[in-house]
Amino acid sequence: MIADFHFLRPWWLLAILLPPMLIWMSSRSSDVRDRWKALIAPHLLDSLVVMPGRKKQLGPAWLTATVLALSIIAVAGPTWQREPPPFVSDTASLVIAVDLSPTMDATDISPSRIERVKLKIKDILAARAGARTAVIAYAGTAHLVVPLTEDADLIQSYTDALATRLMPKPGKNTFAALQMADLLLKEDGSSGTILLLTDGIEDATAAPAKEIGSGLIVLGIGTADTPAAKLDIDALKKFGSEAGASVATITDDDADIRWVIQRVATNFTRQTASEGDRWHDLGWWLLIPVAALFGLSFRRGWVTRVSVLMLAARLLLPDTAEAGTFTDMWLTPDQQGRIAFERGDFATAARHFKDPMWKGTALYREGRFKEAADAFAFSDTPEAWFDRGNALLHLEEFEEGIAAYEKALEKRKDWPEAAANLALAKRLLKQQQDDEEPEQPNEKPDDMQFDDKGKKGKAGMVNLAEETSEMWMKNIRASPADLMARKFAIEAEQEDKP
Image (cartoon, rainbow, N blue to C red; front, side, top):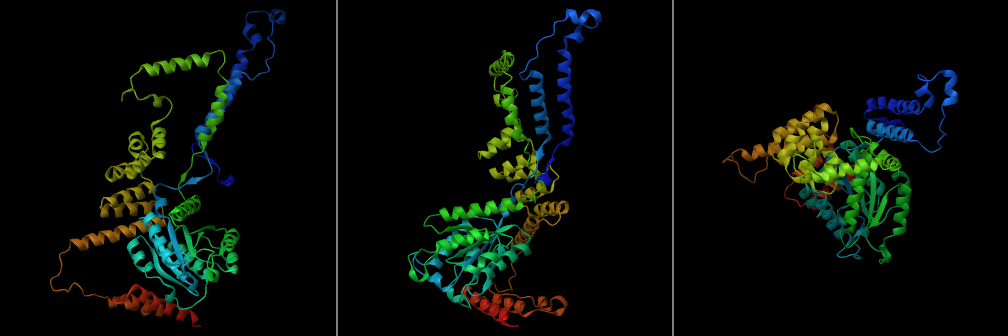
């Protein structure tokens, strides 16, 4: 933190010379001998001049100099923390690891633990509309069900088919699931959270789980009322304490869903705090001591008289668009916009903001995507191009959106969120173009066309896992449950081979 300390506007620190000059000038003006030395002979000066007594209280000059110094430091913008750009938090990735060991068939919660898990996953997807989510199933082995995707319908279709009978090996290997989830996030290059939906964790898992780089949260499934497979809440809490994970238990309402969403957002904010390009201006904290010191200056009525005159003049003026409002005396338009933004009044915030990024953000949150895209166009930062691309995607202007994301990646290399949105924009553009093409009358609508050229692969080599994955994906007649059962069995067989 100390190493990151710097000033956003360091040139303002040159004004720090003003407070000492103010004190020096004040001391010169209070020197009675200096006032009369040009009019009275030096040998008479000491006898004729009566020096005032020394004042022990803090003088106005020192008070003013202190306030001025603090104000200069505040305006210089001290900072040591980064803040993520707007909208990036919407892309926080989540990998859900579902325990499919036999105990998940227990019926201590209706209709069963695994069925309740499916309902909770559906609620999580609904609360994170548009965010990227992946699903892993594990028991004695861990297997990828759905990779990171924004397609909630795809995730739902496969998670609805999850069952304990699909797993090729009994038992429980939680760490294998954690390793797979962490690797999935690292290969994607995104910050994210791993959510464990389980009714128990092995004792030996805590130590290696502590080395997992991604955020980890655990939602315990079940109750302590089932002797054969009771939920050991104390063991889950112990795991959370040792592994640095947040732990909660399933609820009948959506309190657990809100808890999950909050933890995902918190993890993402912490993980991206050192990755954002925008530094958080912390100079405003110095306004507190400045205001306190100004309170000491209310003596002999001079500040009071000036303040009363200002207030009276302001109150007598009409609140018109030309004259401004009473708030304009104290807050800049951007400050007024930020207050409205924090209240969720995005329409008012958009009217006040002068900063193009904040104005565009407020318009985006208001759903005025065309105006938001125009506002972002006034800034040439990678965040502005990224946010402009988001707005253009809502307008279904995919070509311009692609250009905006490419510009963002040109200015900020290796930005996973921008790369992911660029890929999404290209897919949407292709889908739009395909929808506009006329249907071929000679082609049967139910026929499936496969490209055999891809089998050549790099240097003509395709490993067995890729072949089997392609085989089960092509078997469109099988149900998702059958497809997963075959895939899991093949992967487990491959793991057993030396």
